[in-house]
Length: 343
Image (cartoon, rainbow, N blue to C red; front, side, top):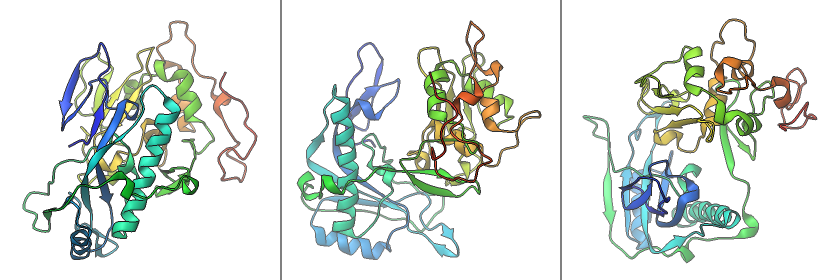
């Protein structure tokens, strides 16, 4: 289910899913023009009996259901994973055609969701659930599972004005990426940069449209699923596979080569990866992967001339994208003067 209204991009085939219409090229945040349901994604919340009592006291129409990994044991205890959906009395509208305003309204929506969850239910939500294009799938559980729950609470629809908003209290969104030990940690406003200081944002901006990502993963001897011959697209194992409720899924990630006009794509269909982008997955890839012979860093592989579809034979200048010297003892992104910049 998707609870948003999206524009139809002229000249592109469209499809309908869960009430939203969007281009088959992708259901991106930038195309969403309204949100109709407030969805809360809780990864480790209070016991169900507690949350049920709180929902009954609210008097709002709501749907509560446990997710696939509910009851999974972490450090010897079972964690509570569930979602709560509140249909809105009036859609939360965004303005298309004004990128700055659209970004601000998206940030406002994330803030409203988080503050509503804390104020009304005393819970913290998965921040990725605040994206206006977030999908909330229908309730499901593992075959034979008994520890699952789904309920509908009668009541009135939620008004956006009941979701507290304070512009002065808004903070930069937290990005979550793996550190050198493979643990997922939060960085506020950090760019996806490899451990040797290689800036993936600037690299993709300059070279993403020419990058043959399918060849890259083949070169890394990665686990492939279906690989349509000659299309530049494939299904592969997710670099963040350990976060999935169903591991070893080599169909989870769809990749597509840059087509000289649009950048390459690395998209995971698992809900646990919804907040991560293509560059986050490349950062995750560099945590523990064994590099091909002759390479000392993943950034060197990314700059290999054989991975680019330029007719003029050009490829990235590796040192141009280094933001700091990895031999220097400094953990802050960008704290050391950059060695170069994208031109």
